[in-house]
Amino acid sequence: MKHGVIAFAIVLGVAGCENVDLGEFAGFSDRKVSLRDTSNLAYYPDDEILVAAKAQFKAGNYGKSFRMFKRALDVTPEDPAAWLGFAASADMLRKFDRSDFAYKKLQPTIGNRIEYLNNYGYSMLLRGELVQARAYFLRAYEMDPSNPVTANNLELLRNSVEFPKRGPGQLKGI
Image: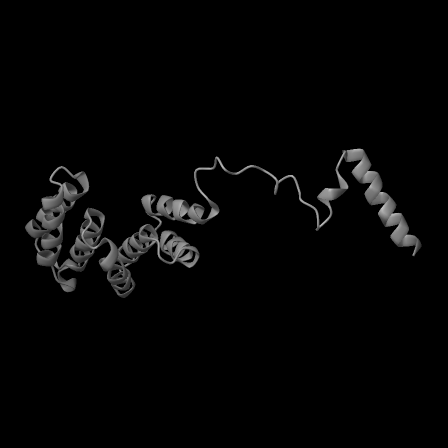
């Protein structure tokens, strides 16, 4: 019993010395952090995962972005931006079964948008399906001929056609 009283006195003494409100230690009171006004924040906590996932993707960290987009989908399972990022990350990791699932999920909602057409066309390009990739890129181009992503994708496609395909055994000795 004496030890409990001594410990409590020490806590009170430390709290008094540091000018700390006892409410900071209580589990039932509102802390200053919880009373903070958050109405002016640009992103809610749900979007923080999505923003971080996009940053990882842009940095080329596709494994991290894949996991983070998956976490974003756990928080907001119907978010097209999270599904599109998840699909793009899966494409870069060559997890085409996962990206196909995501594109099928997205098709009814944003299947006729430039972002979808460019991403799915790029997925086809990565798989070596150049005719299908061209069809998606051209649909995106018809919607907006000035879109720089579409122009870049068409250039990548043209370069892919011009380079010869080589079998796995033909690169030995390099």
